[in-house]
Length: 305
Image 1: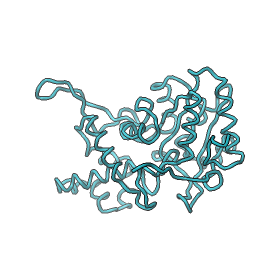
Image 2: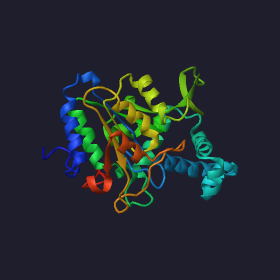
Image 3: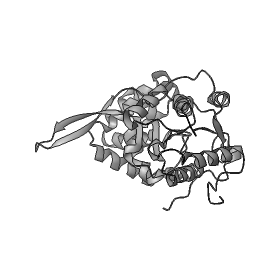
C-alpha cells in the first residue's frame, strides 16, 4: 500500500480512490474504462491553454514569413495582446482564425509541429517546461488503473490531434484513446496521384464539452466509463454519466485551490457559461473532490530532459 498513489496524502479523497481501485477488479475487464479530461485535470491550463500557446507560437512564425497575416483582425488582436478585442470577437472566432494557420497540413505535419513545440516550450510563469506541467498524482492514478486492466482514455475539449500528438509520451495513452474536438479533413490527391488528407479550419461537429462529451464517448469508444475525472462545468455530464451506472464507480473533480504551487481559481468551461459552480455540483452529487492544496504532496511531475 505504501507504493500505491505515493503523492496522495492520507484522507477521505485517497481512501475513495483506493476503495475504487480495490473494487474495480470485480468488474469484467471489458467494462473497465476510465475517462479523463485533459486541461486542468491532467496538466496545467493557466494562465492560458497549452494548445493556445502552441497556436500563438505558430502565429509568430507565420507572421515572420508573411507579415500581411498580422492584418487579420483576430490575429492582430492576439499579436498585440488586446484582450478586450479578443473578448469582443469571442474565443471561438479567434481560436478558429488561429487554427486556420495549419490549414492544408497533413496529420503527420501537424503532429510533428506539436511535438517540436512541446520539446522546447516553457510555461510562462511556473519556470518549467510545458511538458513537465503534468500533475504527478494523476500520473500515479493512471498507472494504478492500468495495473488493474482499466482502459484509460482522454476525453477533452481540446483539439483531438493536438492531444493525440503528446498523449502517449506524457500519459501513456495511445492516440486512439483520445476523444476531443475534431476538425474536418479534405481528402484529395497530390500531383503524383497519391491520396492524402489535409487539415481544414472547420470543426467536424461542435466543441467537445458538456453533453457532447458523453455522445463522443459512445460514438468513439462505445463503452460507458466506470470512472471519470474532470475539473470544470464542461465535464459535468461526463462525470454524471460515469456516476449513474451500477457497481463500483468514481467521479473525480479536481479543485484548483493551491495558489502557492499552482493557481487558485474556479474552473469554467471554454464554450458556455455555468449555472452552478462545479464544486457545488460535486458536493450535491456526492462526487469525490480533490483539493490540490490538501490532497497532493507533490503537484508536478519530473520528466527526463
